[in-house]
Every structure is written in structure tokens, then in C-alpha cells.
Length: 328
Image (tube, rainbow, N blue to C red; front, top):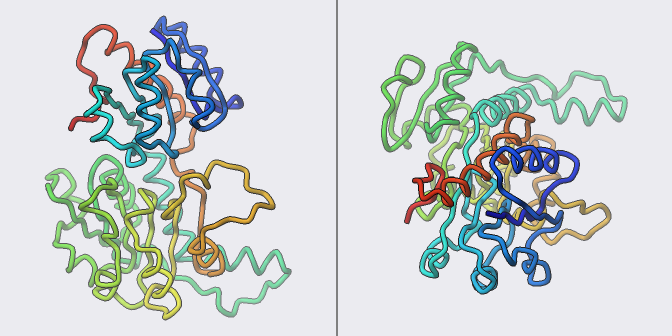
């Protein structure tokens, strides 16, 4: 069995791959480049490829199928960058990974603390040696009502960790989790929108959740609401977000993800002209904190992502059910 790794980082992933290659008896080849028409051929002789979120269209599926690849192993929880239906129609299979939810949950709470205390503005002004107080007064997270949309593994962990701050927590999910009711009150979306000082998103990206935060939903929110997104950029309509930041309806945002980030985040774009108008606008707001999709990035998470990639192919080779496989 053999895997071709794309976008493999030599400085933090390669040694882990070498370790698990020996442990599971699976060979691998690798490139630090993202998949392209020119480099997909390195997967010849491999049963699987491993990729991170990137451009991967139907032409790429055709190419890897033609050289014998049978499995696409997404080195991420999300897989919205993949044409899933087309992949399965062509007889290939797809697997994603999961990892301990603490890293993203704690990052979301960090963004809440930073936005409520206006850390971006404080640091920008401190760098210019402006140590005055005017305009820097924040609000205490403990005094806020937090709305958590999505109570899967990460959203549930956010709720449990937030409970120690003493804030009121509202939650929305299609299926309610009884265990969480000691910490949070489940409610409908409209109530969550109207009552929350801070709204944090923890949903998968799909047709049902696309632009769940839009002009209509923002209109239902409190004046001065703060939005946090560590899930997927497509959950928020960027244009609606920008319009409402300008008016003050939204008083701040902490965004680890944005729309149209594929081909941008994880690349070194120093001195490049970036064709993303929404990114440029969001960077101009002192009340917006932007981080480049790094909420997941801890030692524990990277180790989990690599190991579960090898485990997925091991299960496939042994004919066992793969718990990480994406089902149609």
C-alpha cells in the first residue's frame, strides 16, 4: 500500500509521516506542492492521495483515476473543496479525519476574548506608541450572552469550556444534546440571533449552511453583535458582513476562515497582488481580527491528522469499515 502526499510540510509533517509509515507498513511519496496538472503523476503506483483544502476539481479526479488511485484522503475535517458526488460516480472513495476538538474550541474562545477587549485596536495603537485609553474600553465576556450555532464535537466543547466564564449560553442544533443542557439553553435560530451578544459558528459547509449568516439573519441580531467563525468561510456572506460592519450593526468579528480562501491561505503571498476584495476590506477594519485558518494548528492535531490518514488506508487495504470515510 502506498500514499502520495501533496502539500506536505517538511518542517512539521514529514517526520510524523516517516514514523507512521513504519508503524503501519504503508509507503509514501510526497511533494510540498499543491495538486496540479503537472504533479498529479507522482501518485502513479499509489492506492491513495492525501490532500489539504485546495483546488481539486473533476479534471483532477479523472487524472488520478487514470493512474490507478482509488482513494482520496482529505487531511482535514472539512471536505467541501472536493467534488464528492463526481468522485463516487467514478468509483473512487473519500475519507476525512477528525481530531480532538479542544484546539478549535479554545481558539474560538480566544477570538471572543480578543474581540470583546478590542485587542486588535489596542495592539495596533501600541505599535504606534499610542497608549491612550480613548476607544479601547471593552466588555467582559462573563457579562455576555453567547450564541453557539452547531453543537457537534467542537461546538459542544466550546459550550463546556465557556461555562467556566459564567456567561449565559444559547445553543442551536438540529439534534439537541441532553448533556449540554446543564450548560446551555437550546433555542431556535431567531431567538439566538436576537438575544446573543456574541455568535460563534461551528457548522459543516454544505448547501444547507451556505451563507447562513446573511443580510436577513444579521437584521435579526442585536445591534453591536460580535461574530466568530472558526468553521468555514462560506457560512458567512462576506458582502453582508462588510456592509454591517460599516454601519456598526456588527461591532466586531473574529474570523479564522473567509470565503474564497483556497489558493490563498497556507501560501506565502508576500508582495503579491491578491485578488480578494473582501479580504482587503476586512483587513481595513480595526475591529476585525483575521487569522489564516490556523485554529486547528497544534502539535496534537497535526499528529492526529497524519496518523488517521494512514489508518484510513490500512482499513481500506484490510477490507475493514473506515470510520473516517465520507458516505454519499
